Length: 285
Image 1 (cartoon, helix red, strand yellow):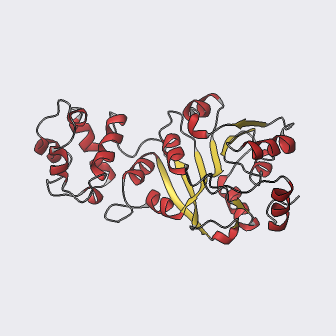
Image 2: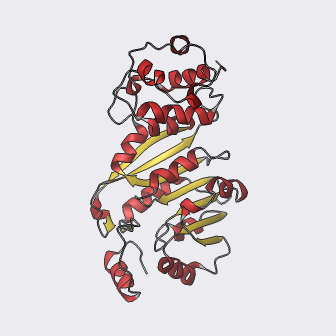
Image 3: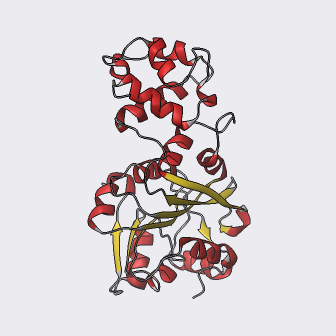
């Protein structure tokens, strides 16, 4: 069957009595042009290990199996997993897992399975949380090409001084070059989602853009500060929990070390300054 032909997808779902779930974000890609763009962007070669989260009916799985050394596909829905097992279960390069990706240790899977690429139409309900796990994996993938909600994609690529810039932007851009490849219309899916989608590419940097000496502190710091993004950074730090401040010298000294003034607001602070601030607060400037 042709998995990008809406009539065939509808017939298959009806035959197996599968009603796409909004809760699980089940919107199946039915546009061949978009599929071709995803595959061209992924640059998957025969030596690559690929992780696919939410394979659905296998529209990406099939061409990935023709290209990769191994495809690890994680599908939460038991009905779709059963279909994938019947269709691709005997393929020697496929490892098919029935599970919620959020319940798995994705960083461990990436390390033990030799995953180099992530290529997925991520479920909208869990896409951001999955991405954050992948970004912070010790053996983070070389390349990721994922479909997401358009507003999440805009946050990922946003720069300082923009409304969309925030914790997610900083976490992604610290480790990756992030490119919004294409806005994707709801009509490219069945059933059409209520929001627009976007294809985002991640290219892993050879090293982080700036040194972060305490990654867990860095993540906690930007999360705390952007939860109060309209306040001034000096005020935010003054009311920060002890776990963030530790044995740090005076706040004014830390801000000065990072090249910041008390009145700066989180959305105006570039990644380099966030790194310097975290290092100063942990006494590792």
